Length: 253
Image (cartoon, rainbow, N blue to C red):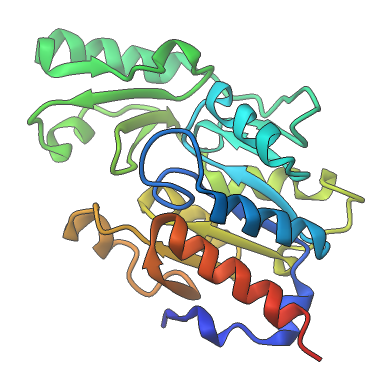
């Protein structure tokens, strides 16, 4: 049963060493610049000893500037878990994933559905994940053709990635290499808003759903009761209220 973020206890708050946040729908609802309130909350988390990192469907080219601007110390995981860096300064960590299976399926979609299939604007910036739009084509029709890949709907675009890849699994793979190498899963708190974040919610028990009113009912139904906590406000304001409460509880004597 998902609870209000107000149920985060001082004991749990002091246990958290790493916060991992999705970006679109979680830190912001549009564009590439977070609000000053979000930036301040991230700075507060870092100041009180909690590393902050990102785990997003965005490519690195749209995540690294954010990490640099906010001076975060945690990992940068891009393309729905396909691409990872242990810190914003480090090189790519080789997760061993390939883009070829998803590209093959995309070409099949283009041949069958013609102009209804459109590549995402950042398509060429992506290393593994294939981001695209499918105008007026039911998801059920697309999923019938999937072989060796999975289809994800972030609420912003569709993504195709290799089977077995997820945000949560990739974070768990590199967790022992982050910071001093001793961070445990129960010392991580993850934030997300959509179906692409379900793996974060299932792999890490201390999970927070940020309200995204732009999602349709079918898109939100799959999230029901999975996260441990839930924000009251939407998008970045929701992240701020939870992050600030986490810091407050951490400092409670």
